[in-house]
Image 1 (spheres, rainbow, N blue to C red):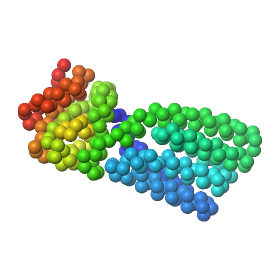
Image 2 (cartoon, one colour):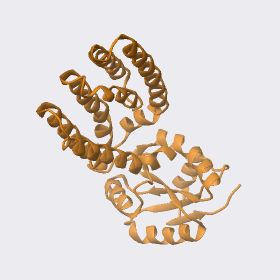
Image 3 (cartoon, rainbow, N blue to C red):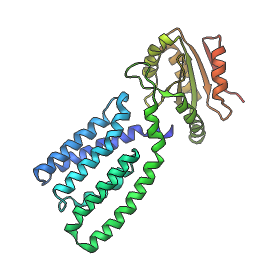
Image 4 (cartoon, rainbow, N blue to C red):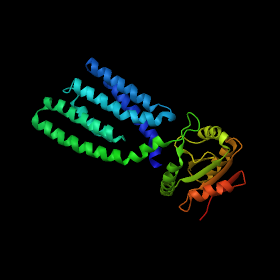
Length: 286
């Protein structure tokens, strides 16, 4: 889950890249290059500003969008845009499926071929060797993010516009978040919410409004939702619990569990099904 906190930084990077491309359109460029830079800039900006419900789609669009722009720039004017050749390492560092990786590696080789005619044999061989090394580093980084990226395709949608992660993702995230809270000194809680299935979309919508953007929500089953709450300390966590209880619509049952190594998700879910009280808070347990 720690990587998900970087979503805002990723969007900021996209917007910054788009801004740089728009600035480049103001420099001496041929008409085709200026049009390509502007189109790619607007595409990146649209992806960065896209709503949460299409985040997975927008993230999947970014690598091919950049690849098409880079290929066309180097095809149209390899002499003027030779420095853009190194951008292929950044493209391969983005998570993407294997067929797309193969296509992008092939396009990178073609771009090198177009550029090498303008820089001479010795320089082109050195550039090719450096490009391969950088692309391998980028590929290693991208493969490290592959599992998280693929998780974007396994969301459940109880209502349009309310993307929820699955139970499998919560199982993966929980130990990571427990370790992160212990390392950073923040206070984390798992909130489980149980309601009639017909009320789950309404509850999911209210939960999205009442929680922070980096706090991912989960659909555990047709009756149960979950969210990992992150607070600065215990006092803030207490205030947020009270605010959430007031904000979340009835009928529902709530169970707040402090994150600790001893936390067992199956045990807490089992206890949730037997819970009689409207609200249960477990601040410490062993």
